Image (cartoon, rainbow, N blue to C red; front, side):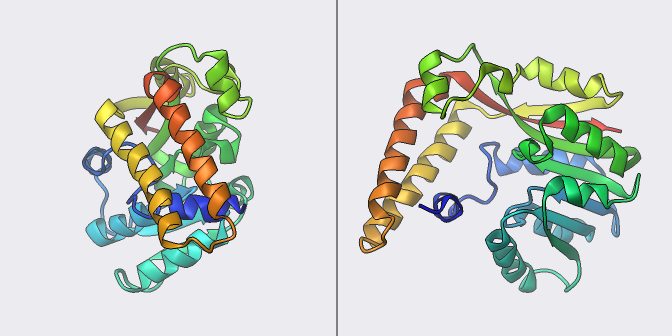
Length: 249
């Protein structure tokens, strides 16, 4: 089964690919005081809904970096009906390679929500962003954290994940502070946020499979989403957190 296909179906009804509410995300964006023609880069931009909204609302200039070409194709279609042509530069590339090509201090806001793995983890993502964001510019990071120590069963259900892959909420903030960044604000996903995100994720796949019984991946997708739903309800809901962190460079 194509993982990108599964992800596209599972997230087709989400505006953003994370459990923080749209209201909280946009409130944090407001704190960055964006002005027309400010430059914004989004690493792991997906279908670019957030970046498109920033162009719509603030008339900024955007750079979207995404490894999955299908997501960028969808982003191009969306952008074409909503924002002026050329407002966003779409880059289909490895995040590390794309960032290496950026000039130091050339962006006013850097965004990486749920994609720090693309740059090797939280610290390396913050360090990379620090290099390409201007002095007193802003960095918005979305990162998971442990609410409590994960059980061995939960880690196994996540495919052999290790406890060291995530930190606590406080340690996520500290990672930025240790690089000289100033933490300005943070929101974490509430239980209601998580439930809405996970049940919408699950329902999207269930509905797709009901509507497309002849899809060759039908059975595999149902097996996967039902296993994931069990994992979330059994362990994840009480153990895994997700936070948005706004830093000033």
